[in-house]
Length: 581
Image (cartoon, rainbow, N blue to C red; front, side, top):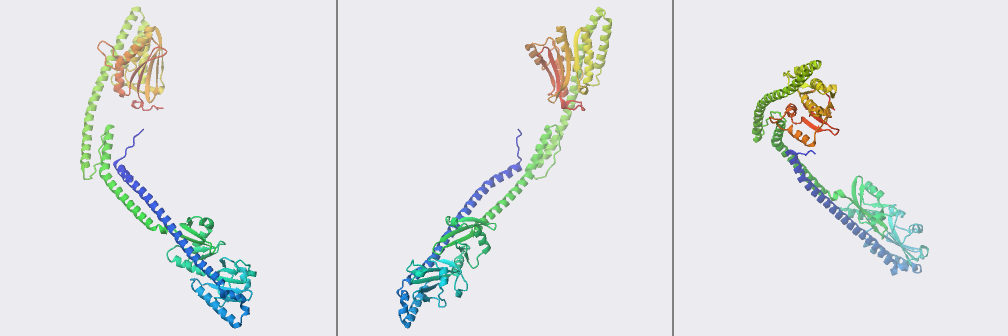
């Protein structure tokens, strides 16, 4: 798994963000808590004020009702039931006395109240408003023992809605059997004026609403907003909770409702939450603006640090990485006015010096490598020649003239190839031709020697060190097949796990576990003077040609015999036209 490395600029910006994020989270939580607390306190205050206003209004209505009750029980008022037996003067004098009491009783009320008394038995009608007359049909239509909102009013009031309440004597007597009827009324406009007075203290936009949906608003009420609220109101549910939130025309509002049983009205008030929390919101905007500018300032400071420190460091890191890959770059020299200018200039000078030294060492290594290759070739070529001379001598003694001629022909092909020293490498197909000549010579000696070569045609262009296969084939024949008296040798080539390989297999006598381990160890160590060096030479030449990822591997075969494998990385091969799958 690749490790993530962060540069200095990223770390500084990340550190600034790590410092700002807790501050922002804490402030957001504190601001949210403050908004919630202020909103709840404002809602509680609104509900408290609304309840107080509702209680005051109900108290005025209750006082008015109490005044009507007192009037109905007044001895002078009750005398209207028997006024027909009095003289005309006494009747007039009694009406004036009652009228004065009515006016005195209404004078204590802050509303424009009208109080009227009617005695059906004597057909007597007295009212605090001298312009009113008795209308029995209208009384029947509006009769109610509790306050009732009505728009059916006498013509004197010019159709202005009023609240009306009736009392009878006896108290629970039906209208047609009442000895005395007291009518109390006040205009709905008085409630609008009370709303105006209550609203002038900054108490939102309250309004009254009847169970039937009739609305009594203040003079300057926001009627569209009230209509939007009323369309969402559930008055019975709203009275069970101190306040409820609504979304009106895209803004959030808190609404409260108080039921007024005295007047059979709901008193509703609402206020925009954003108005309540506006100071907190303004402070939050100021805070976020400061954080924003602080973030910009921190970013600028981090960028200046990045430009003057991180960029030169990055160039040095890139230079070191390229230097490790064998490149010798010339870094771009910055002028930040600090120590990095000196470091960059010094790095460029050091890279040039290292490049020159590496070139000198590389030339020496090439010369040494060529000398080693020629020395190894000189050690391998005589090895096979000695064996062939021994075989020619034996065949000559036996008088095998034709065989000797074939042997010398193959031997001449072999040494014509091996004595060409202008190149240290050869194509695989050339090495295979040499092996065929060698195996033809060995088949003369070992009559039951069989061999097969299975190498794809496109692999014939692979470049290998010269005489790299012959020692492997020779070992397989001499140490595997020849002691067994017969056998088969297979040569295969291919590619596996990104590496080319040439495999030489035999089904000879094979190796024991101990001999195989000893041989595997010997091919990795320089040979002693009294031991052969063919396999060690072969491995060394592969290492010199292709690097440490190449080499020679000896394995025991399960079905018997030994296999020797030459392998080298595909990218190190000189076969440019070979497609690697």
